[in-house]
Image (cartoon, rainbow, N blue to C red):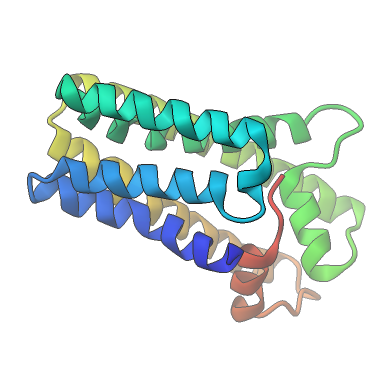
Length: 198
């Protein structure tokens, strides 16, 4: 079920973009709210009182926004909240006595990490901190100064192409720099999906 949830969540940017360009913003809102409710209430999580309370508050809030014709505002949240969450995780991992996220991931793939590799992966973690910061600033700035269509192109399509490009280029460069690295691109992608980012 977790893998299926991952697929559904991964489809959200496309669904949101299609909904915006088809002038059906509630398609994106409905999809987003459904994802959150499933995550909160899918068995056995529905047995947790806190989850039920959050889900109930979410439904009431959304219904209120719909009555006020303000539910479209919810679409603006994921491109800010998701990078912000990742930014916090990556920043915390850069603190003293912590292992940078990319270093952890490299150890997950290769099972080892020398000083040179640790220094390199720390810098890559810092790079991603910059990327997530850019995404947050971009999402906020375009929501204020650009049309929702342009904002959607940038946040739902452009940002994910940017992340994919960085991942591919970094993989190629790492293979070039560390000749002993025998990780295949297929193994790299599978590890990205399987790794618990926290």
